[in-house]
Length: 196
Image 1: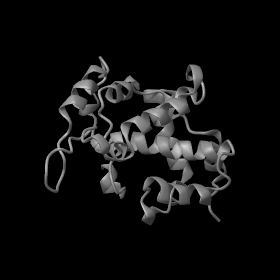
Image 2 (image 1 turned 180 degrees about the vertical axis):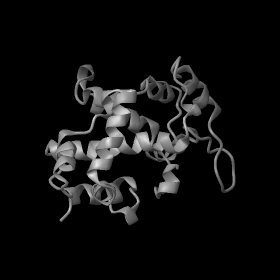
Image 3 (image 1 turned 90 degrees about the vertical axis):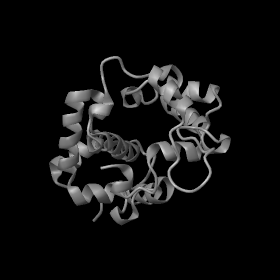
Image 4 (image 1 turned 135 degrees about the vertical axis):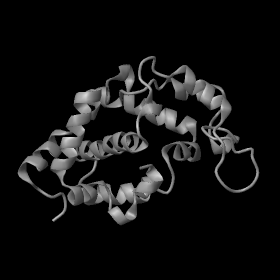
């Protein structure tokens, strides 16, 4: 399953190109914080230097005509991947891990569960005041599939215990960046819903 199959209006690379690679790069740096400690292990995974190099190369997305995709081709339909961006990404490829061998539904699940986990962290840390606030923000702010209602409504649909199990499985395989937030674990243990 890809992001589009799940119900998102665009995939992650397209969204990054729409927003701007420079904006995405600055947002990531803000989340990491000075010395890499703001969100800690939750920001681990890939080498984020790829974004710095893309910005330095002027590959900022749609606004410059090239980002992850090349927008110079006329006409409608899918745009080809940008050759310069692919060359940069290749330099940052992990020496022993090859994501191209992982089924796309597993790749999407990893990204999606990290997003869901962050929404729970936001509630747990008082950044948002309610699950409803998070759901509204996710649907209107980042294009979360409206028919699923938002990340907290989705967790109510599938069950917090299922989400915790999936995150724990990913944590064991890929590290603590997939660790479920304590608030999510507590909800799962209590069998509580996020929405009444």
